[in-house]
Amino acid sequence: MKNVVKHIITSPIIIYTFRCVLGFLAGYLLMLQFPKMELFWTLLSIILVISPEGKDSQKLTLERVRSNFIGSIVGLLCFLIHATNIYVLLLGIVATIVICYLFKPTYIFIS
Image 1 (cartoon, helix red, strand yellow):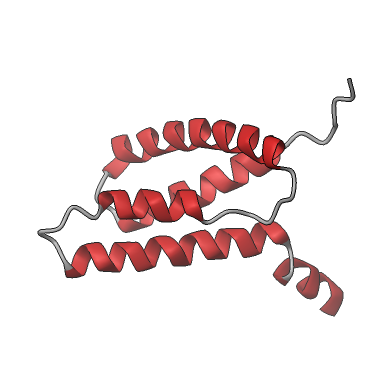
Image 2: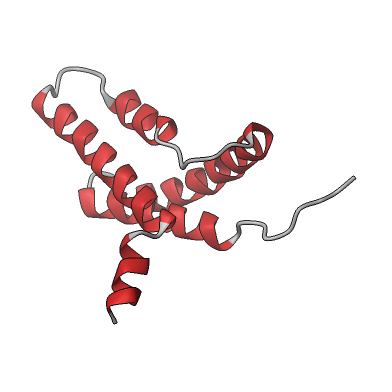
C-alpha cells in the first residue's frame, strides 16, 4: 500500500497536473484581485509556460500542438457548459491533461 501511494504521489502526470492547477489558481486570484486589468492572457500564458520535463524539443513541440488542439476543444466545451465557473475551468484543465496523457504515443518512428 505504501509503494502504491508513493508511486501515485511521484507520478509525473500527477505532479504536472498539480503544477498546472496551482499556476492557474495563482493567475485566477490575480484576475480576481485586479478586475479592471486584462489578465485572461495571464492565465493562458501560465498554462502554456508550465511544461513537463522533457529533453526532446521536436517531440515536445508536436505534443504541444496536439495538446493545444485538445485543450481548445475541451475549453470550448467548458465555455458552453458554464464559462465563469471556476470548477468547470479546473475540470477542463484536468480533463485536457488526462486526455492528452491517454493519447500519448507509446511508440517511436525510426526513419
